[in-house]
Length: 138
Image (cartoon, rainbow, N blue to C red; front, side, top):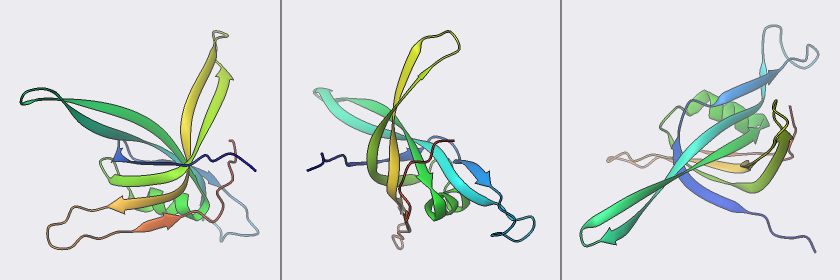
């Protein structure tokens, strides 16, 4: 039996998503690019009471990677400040920096990204679900 690795977090995009593209002449019309993956960070806020009528907000920043059609959807529709719920698996990346120091970073490999709208008239919800949730390093 394999272990359970699932995470869900809600927050706001800290910047516009960054896309990486691939070109394959046989599959795509001339001049068309397909998004292979996109990366973005979200800021998730948590408020806690520290005293009578005093609250402290803690912000956690999480990096997210999405692939395929889901990545295209995110790049086309999401911008800095967009509130989303991200569900996926947690992955630890390790590398050696230019100074020879070992570095590590956790990121979420997105399986589902849901747009959260706070419209007073009607709440809309768009959903991007990845058909290919395998991690492809670039």
